[in-house]
Length: 189
Image 1 (cartoon, helix red, strand yellow):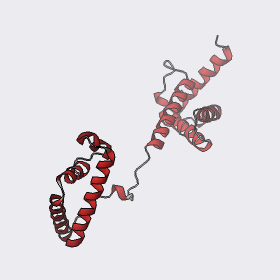
Image 2 (cartoon, helix red, strand yellow; image 1 turned 30 degrees about the vertical axis):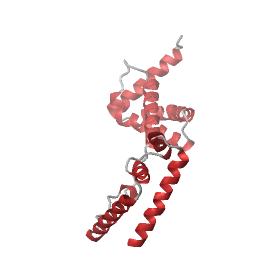
Image 3 (cartoon, helix red, strand yellow; image 1 turned 45 degrees about the vertical axis):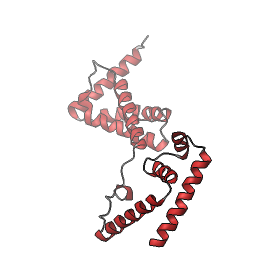
């Protein structure tokens, strides 16, 4: 059961919203601010905001009252319902921003890759030719395992399952292949 004093206060607050919307009444805004700002801050604290964030969000909601009082419809909701809905939405927006922070333009990961110099590209091509030639010199059982690991991206366990080999055999064959590749490439470089 709603008390008469509560109904009178609701009507008074709705009248204040109309005064803000119609005449930009600072007195009406001050009355709503004094009543709702502490309550909004307390609500934000209960939603998990820190003290500073709760204060900032409460003030942001009150700025919205000043700017958008004309959008309030006393037939749709009470002033408190309207304000606390705005507050809840602002808190959700703040949480989303925290989970997805603004991008830093100076972050090296956001910079485009540097243009490769022609001599670097040529050297890379030459290295690839040498590596392929050395791979061809490997025994087939080692070459197939190295190709599965590096061209197909399989783990040692996946290679063992695919080739029906013990895991230790896979590891030792790949290790031997690396030693042969390193030896062959060291001679050519």
